[in-house]
Structures are given as C-alpha cells and as structure tokens.
Image (cartoon, rainbow, N blue to C red):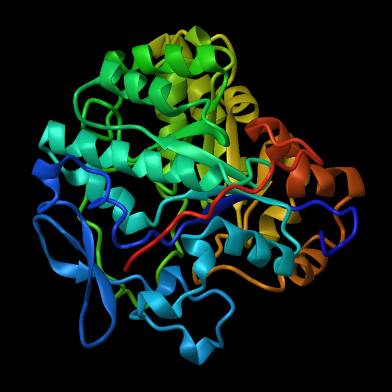
Length: 381
C-alpha cells in the first residue's frame, strides 16, 4: 500500500458498468430488450426499456477531475478504467491510499432493474448483473466486497434462491436491494423468509441511500445528493416496529451514503414517542427503539463533520467511512487529506474503527490476505 501500514476501507464505492454487461449475459430472447449503452451528441448514455430518455453517467465517473470538467455527459472511453476493470481499480485504490472497497451499482442501473415488472426479464437482468459483479470482485477479494443484488419480483423465495446462487463466490459477502421481494418499498410478513435466510448466512442487508420503485432520472438536478438520509429513519422504524430484530437478533442492516449526524436526534425522538405511547399501543418491543438502532444498523458517510463532532451520541462501532468513488462526491485522490482534517479530534481507536475496523468485521475483509490476481473483466461500450 502507498501509505505504509495504514488501512482505509470504503463502505460505499461504485462501478462504472460496461455497455455490454447485460447483452452478453442475458438469454438470447432478452438480448434486444436488455439495457445497453448508446452514443449521442452530448456523450454516451444507458438505454433502458420503457424509459425513452437516455440515462447519462457523467457525475458517476468524474472523481478526480477539475470542477469545471465535472459534467453530466461524458464518453465511456474517457472515464477511468477502474469502473469496469478491477486491475485498474486496484491502481486507483493505491493512488488514493484506499485498502479495499464495498462495491455498489450505478444508481440508475440499480433503479432501472428494480423497475422491470416482467418477472422473468427482471430475474434475467439481476442474474446477469450478479454474475458480472462476482467476476469483478473475484479478481482480488481482499480489495473488493461484492453485494448480491436481490430480485424484487417473484417473492421472497426467489430472492433467497438468487442469494444462495451467488453469495459465497469469492468476494461476494453481503446482499443489497432496491425494493423488497414483494415488489414494493413496504415490508410485509413475507419478507421474514428473506430475513431468516440472511440471518442464517450471517451477512448484512444493504440499502444504498433508499428503497423504492421509481424511474431513474438523467443528471439534471441543480443540487443532487443533499437529502440522502430522508428514507433511512423510516426504514429504521419499519424494521424495529415490525419486530424483525426480535425474531432475528443477529440481523444487520447497512445503509450506504446516508451519513449519520441525524441519528442521535432520531433516536431521541423515537424513544420519546415510544415511551409516551407504548402503554396505549402495546408495541411489544423488548427494548427501546434507540437500542435496536445502536445494535442493528450501520451508517455509511462521506462528509459529515457534525456527526464526527458528536460521536459521543453514536455507537461508533456502527459508523462506516466511504469514498463514493468514482462519483462526484468523492475526494479522490485526496481522501486522506480530508480524513486528517475532518477527524482531527477523534480518538485513535475510534478513528481506526470508522476508517477500517468496522468494515473489516461487517464485510469479512482480512488484513494482508491478498488473492492472486485473476484475468481482468472485459468491457465494451
């Protein structure tokens, strides 16, 4: 590593997926319907069935560029190769002093797959994506953690089948979803089948920003990303008051890109209302809501000076540093400079947990366990 014995694990980083990911992997009957990349005058963009306007990706691949060069549209060949080539990604990690990364999809791809209602087509896309991810992270599981993308069509048994198909491949050490297996963002008793399976495998259920079925938007917003945590408090309440953690006491839920400065306030407010209403509503919880939050939820952040200044109100074993590379929020290649500034007053042991220790435990990274390099994943725009 370029920074001696220091370790830095990003709990939220991203791919820049190649344009032929789906067309190369879905069954022949779906090839013409599969998401693919197309060139336009402004740049390249993803084409998704049912979404007329192309989805550009410039802000998802601009880390390290000068501010005036960070534009919504770009060409696939102009982006850094690490988004789709793991051998190049390791070089990019080394330049930034990053030891390892937990890898998430590009948000528009994640949302577009979840939007597909045709169950067979949906599952074909999910399988194609998971196969590509597992090929990528297998290059070096000590540097990458892949997430099994769970299908949200066909019910909980279909989701568990896909989890069992992929989880356990080299580097595939957790699961994620855009919506629940019932096809919505509203939890039902059916999901207990999924929670039981995840609980048995002892991995985390990951949420990237928020759950929901929606059409991914092209990059047009004037100020994206300022409200990433809006959905997370509702998810905490949903899991807690549905009794999920009383039934599955070792279940772990990891939020990516939601920050954590809001968590102490939410804990206080939920507990306050719970204590006022419990005797009337008989919620049946075995502990205070804040205690469930402290134990079962992990919070990934990129920039949260307020949170870092109020760590005494957090369970610091549940805070995860993230780079969000190669998205516009990343500080690449100067992540360590920002860390040294923002964490100047954080005790050394706490700092080490947030920067790498918590992620090591949650995602099974092993220090010094570097796998032999495999053949890089090919890509075609």
